[in-house]
Length: 407
Image 1 (tube, helix red, strand yellow):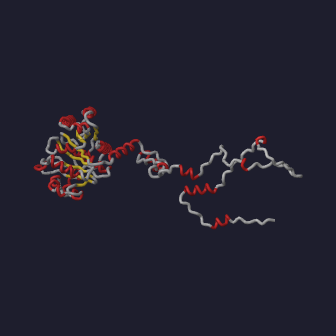
Image 2 (image 1 turned 135 degrees about the vertical axis):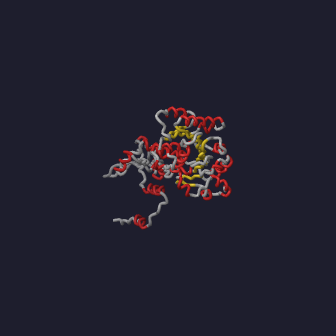
Image 3 (image 1 turned 45 degrees about the vertical axis):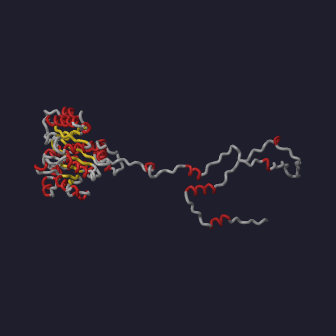
């Protein structure tokens, strides 16, 4: 009985440490190499007539079947038959497949999360179900979110909006404060408001309150002009500014003998300084368009807010303001102006508000109405917390229209 030699190849391989693959493609290639070779189908034997003649006779052995002579080795083709297709290996498939971009296409692996409803029935259902049922925000919330997106749009550079009117007491300063506070609430960068009213403007008093302003150091635009050469940083500039939350303000001159002395050149110097630190600036221009600083304000303005009221005289003067601007070289500012009608005095039902709005809407880019609100009409401190939701919505629409005009 012949001796059988044991096969120790597997045992030796087991004693060797496993080779660490450098990549998943190498591991796949190793897996392909470990697979048994594909069985090649045997070629079909040719018929007897086609077999070559041989001189070797066929011999028979008693008790055994007669066997045919084996074909010569040269008769078997060493090449792979033409009908055979080579199956691609796993390594080839991985190498040819593009790798997914995990950085630029995260949405391929994570489902987009639906926005959370903030209020109403949708918000109540979301809270009651612990977030299991998320119907998404309703139409009103989507509109509010769109306004917030427009207001918070990132800007390249510094832009200035001038707020003016030809008639006093129709909501010009309250609009500047309300819109300025709205910009400060939604924008990532703090806005700045400048009181350039030559008639002892009260912009800072409306934003801070009369008592707080008198208790603070009442530095004004005149003080800034006297020391403007030494202001070389935002910290130095802050000494001449007041803060209503995130809204930064420069107070107007209160002395009647000095308030009307601001020139166009002086305003442009202040505007140049402010532009180094603030991307959004609002300028309360006071009443009229012909005082000393007005040419500098209009020269540096990117868009305008024209304050008007529902009184017949206020609507006519707003239209006159737009005509004056168009005829004095500011046609683009007039065409892109935003007319704000504030129902400050709560006019009677005899006034046709729709007719006044139609009278003004065709000569400006946008017309926005601010409803009557005691928080605006009293002429005192303006804070967003005490305003009606309709008033706050109007200020958001004005702020969004202002930022839309910055191109």
